[in-house]
Image (tube, rainbow, N blue to C red; front, side, top):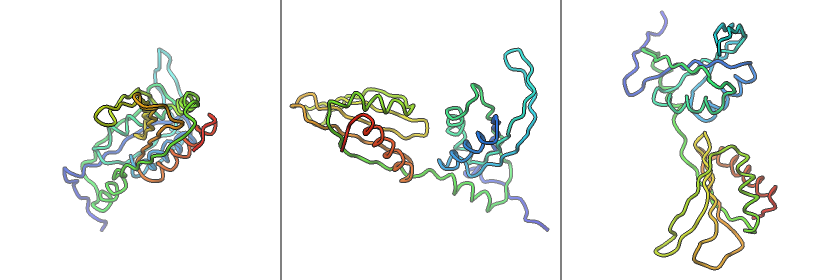
Length: 217
């Protein structure tokens, strides 16, 4: 006799999330990204799903790939937002199916694999400051949303800068010269990401953007 199913305790609810993708390559890229970012524990790709639907008044009959994702229920909102950011469709299908019961060890595994990674911070200085405009344009190409910041360094000193926030929760902050002191020839960069691997990858992108803008460490 097989192992009996075990009801999920309220603090460990798991959901199945269904997403359709236009082809297998897009589905695989989406699944790998979400597993890497620990938003899902795993994904099953079901190819050649025939989808018949109405879109903008026209009935379509198309081949798609169904991606069946498993994650903790508390991560579903973040997962939906991330799928929307990554997906090529204007209105992607993202449907949550709550799981009423699960084999206990599998339930534990899903929670273990979707445990958020700790934030990793990196700080360094770049120069010369007169190239900061080109550097910021290069970072804009990453596709983040930028916002200006103005902070007090200590009791009487202020500093201006820009923060870029990316859909996966990572970010880059570039602080310009302090407004109350003589200009220097460098500026501060701070970046953060979930886990050392993604922080390292983001730092390499930032350094590449700096090199393309004629900026050095």
